[in-house]
Length: 130
Image 1 (cartoon, rainbow, N blue to C red):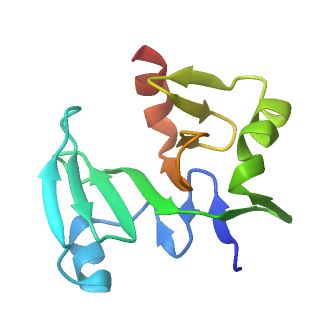
Image 2 (image 1 turned 180 degrees about the horizontal axis):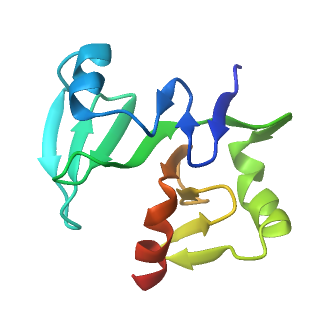
């Protein structure tokens, strides 16, 4: 199984946080579904990934399946991700069932399937405020 590479606050797999909506659609085509979530972000759902943007076009979150997450030279199976972030990130916190790691810029629900949300750095205070 190939690990999905995370460069915290920079890129998740081949999707950089510098991506615009126009560049996203040019790269992946039209999404399967567009919606607006309860925190006022515009979600572009491609089935295998969901990208959420502010109205001004700034990318906030990238959610993808990550059975194995690659962080630098370490490959972490999703089943061990909670233990890993709890041991490695002294700032980790929980909100609404999600475990949020400010050091790695991720949010995920440990007991759920292997969906991981990569966060833009400026999103961490918003998650803390929930």
